[in-house]
Length: 96
Image (tube, rainbow, N blue to C red; front, side, top):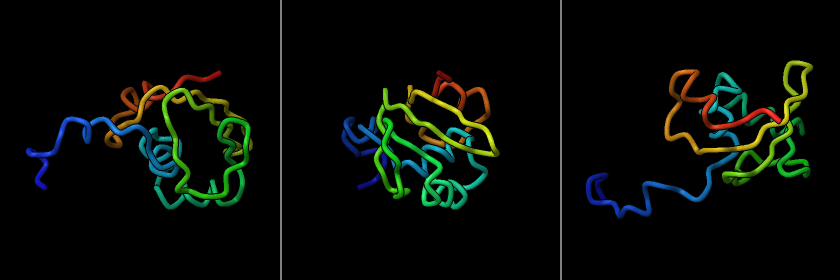
């Protein structure tokens, strides 16, 4: 199916892979680094340690990330469709 003929429901996904979200939200420089961060056990999704980069992230989920010696607690607000500029990426989460 081409992009022009996809149904409207395909445009707004219910979730996104965790490694893709971390990359598109500009929290990791590459998707591979995001995957390594998750596999190493440095990411929690709704208080549960996640070991799979393919874990599904949805709006309103809470992520706890230990990255560069710093603990960040984030609420997912949106699922970015691309890795855009920093302002666009920052709009996809809020710090708690």
